Image (cartoon, rainbow, N blue to C red; front, side, top):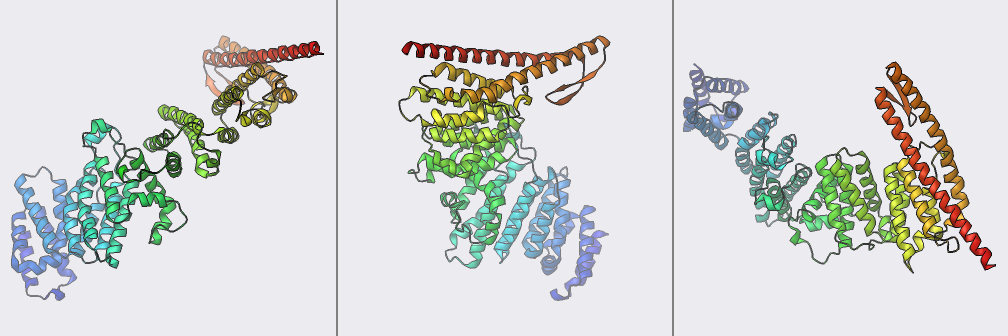
Length: 595
């Protein structure tokens, strides 16, 4: 019945001129053709399409059948091979015979339809037909731009595989699609290379391909993980995709060295305003991804000039590292840390001049490392960030270290980070005291200015000592070190001149704070012990915040731990004061003897 209906419509249309086809004819043809497919009359449908007499009708109306055929191929995988061969023959013929403009829109709509795992199956099925259709069109730049944008939008919905096993399994087909997308794009890149006239259309095609390359650098390559080169055996799909994308850039006359060196400059980099508008949003991620691929993965690195200094390369990449560290994805943060390590390991310790800290990214990157250290839920990244911050400190010259320490003490607002900085200050003082020259920044007036940020309690005696215990312990240990190492008569550090201020601003308030804190926690222990006897749940206040109800045994454990911390601080404080008294007494006696 369906076949007869279709033949009847075709017979009526055969006597009409192409321009006389009505909208009603298109609708009836589509309905009858779809019915043939649904009822399984695909052999008869193939004969109708192959019939030379129906060529004009198929050219104008046949594109309506592409959707039903494609859906059968996608959803009826269990059909026998012979039927699937017929479906493929029909699809190939429709692509060959139908109006390419209508086909292009129809194919792109079909690519946009699926979700989940069907996205990759749809793309892999339709890339070849889509390529054939675009190659027939005259306005190729617009068509390839529309196609690549649609394909990228769909691919960006797929999860990027993270581990080696996930890459090999490729459950969502992203790796296969990346490879197929390269093959899809190659003929259009070759067309740009072969066209020596640099016509307006060719320039537009270059720009559409450039947009695609930038989008690909952002997704999937920004978050994609790469296999170790020793284990990939040339089979890393993302490394292949990245290499080809970078190759495309050179082919369309946007070689990556030129792009990397020009990025961030005030002069216009792109011919099209659209790229300038996207620079802050899309381009920063894409360029960061490109820098990682070149400098860490070593893709096409041999195309860079060998004369570039390690300090220049670090400066080049600091902005990209900042972009990586601003993201929250594990793989992206990890890439930022790898790129930073790659740059820092190329330069000598103490060779990064303080003037570099006048460049914004040279201060925002260490601040970004602090954020990862304190806020990232992944322990390996927190530890790696700490190691990278220490490596960064090691590379700075003395004034650079001094400047960075002041910055981080003022901005980190985290006791553990402040303790880490204070330990580094102690190390630099120790190094300076052993030197005969270049000791200005960690002795004398400069050091006293820095110690003002270290040897004080932010809120005086009312400072939350438990919350700030790491910082306070590090400060006391630094003070103990200074008292032991620097004699009052030498006073290289300036400590003995400032001792009165240190006692008033730090030691005395700390004594009062310890007494208040211990009294509070001892009272809480008493309350908790009484609650334990009555077997009731109760809440306690720690660090000014009420802890939710918990069993009395757990409460006691928390409270005793806090008291232990206060005892530890108190013992170090007592030792510091004992050392100060011994040193001042010894100095007084020496002075009397001299007189």
